[in-house]
Length: 146
Image (cartoon, rainbow, N blue to C red):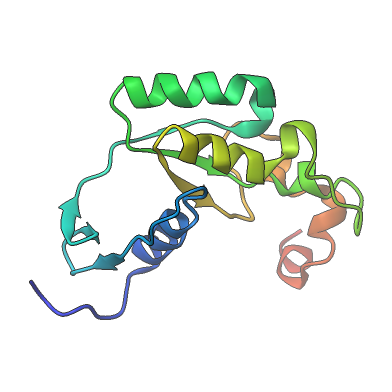
């Protein structure tokens, strides 16, 4: 096996998401060998599907996760929908459909990894890609482009 080196951006993000697997009591060793992810010493090809937490209710999440697992998935991916979490600058909402921690725990309870796409852009038929016009005005690059 090749030595572990610098990770490409996508692999680094995936490693971070794998480490977010909540609810496990045993430590998980995740590395990258320039060809694949290695989880607890075993090369893995992970089969993933999307479940976007604000598009369903928290009561639905355990059933959705179990269906994903039963359907052969190893991992679910979701964006972080920042405009839902910060509808007004400085006011945060992580309750109800926006309870990201509960969502990740539901995945872990079903034995799934989570690929958390932290954004800021959401490419999933979401207004402004999750960046509200109010949020965009705080980024100089967007001001230059508009």
